Length: 260
Ligand SMILES: [Zn+2]
Ligand SMILES: [Zn+2]
Image 1 (tube, rainbow, N blue to C red):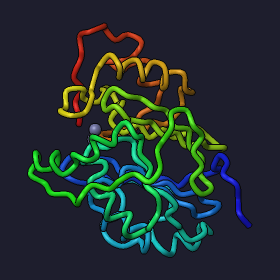
Image 2: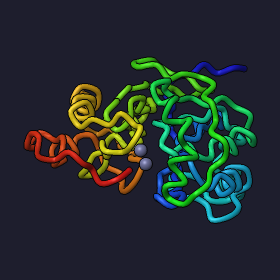
Image 3: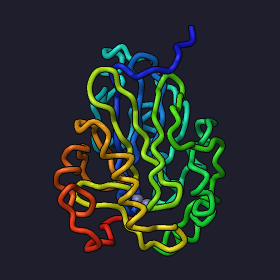
């Protein structure tokens, strides 16, 4: 029987800090169906594949679910099936190894079209850091501002939040029991915001602040925020304390965030 997408009851979330920039790749599974998405599969693709497929290798840096085949069996979660690759934006640390994941899982890759140009530059950007990535992937599906995105049995709301990049999006996983999970890429960090000075990217602090104020601050304060780098936080905590965009932020003082 095909289960229609709806708010997931209990999400199983894992994240891996990958690559030179220690970028957070998140893997989200619906514990009722096994449907799984990979968010920002930018580096160390084999580490992610080995873990999803067979719990082998180094594994995630954090998980709220099974950590071995035995625990998986006990949990009664159906076998995992990767149904989509989603991206918050197209900086190479977030998207450079999408081609490897696409080859492995043969599923669609979702990206906002305003980051298509940036995506074509992934190899050049990686070289700046002395790294090589495969020929850039081309997105199969365009993320649309404000849409409810159904991927397998998982449901996300797409918040288009330009400012770090033109096509940057925050992807909000709808959760039935407990707070939503918000994957923000480099739009917002715990105590910081994304850089707006990177070349070829369309970064703009005023635009970034506007995106955060209008798209993120209205969300429930207990929404769990998964930034592209660094620790987790919540919408409420950042709204109260973030020195760049929080309620008490000075205007025009801070223009450059900490991460790329
Ligand atoms: Zn990044
Ligand atoms: Zn970035």
